[in-house]
Image (cartoon, rainbow, N blue to C red; front, side, top):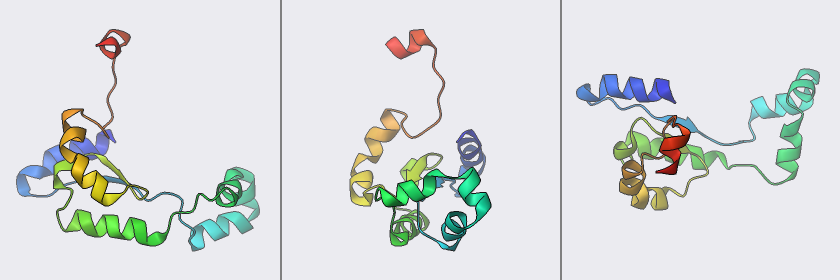
Length: 116
């Protein structure tokens, strides 16, 4: 996240924006390989359970998010994290509040700051 924020800060003057995108758990050839390979079952044993529990993001969700980013819909949120599971219309309505709250960014606070 810090890299995304710094990259965005560096490139925004040239109208280039950076975003961190978490597409979510999408059933792809890569995840199928993880499910069927010994290495995948050994090092990523929780993926099958996630799929069994219904955590399976439609690939189109992430694709539409990327298309919206490319079209400039979420420019206000440049430097922040966007997720494939997000309701894009709700996210668009909440952008100003997210920025005002410094949300979807990586921030470290001390215990004293957290109380404020």
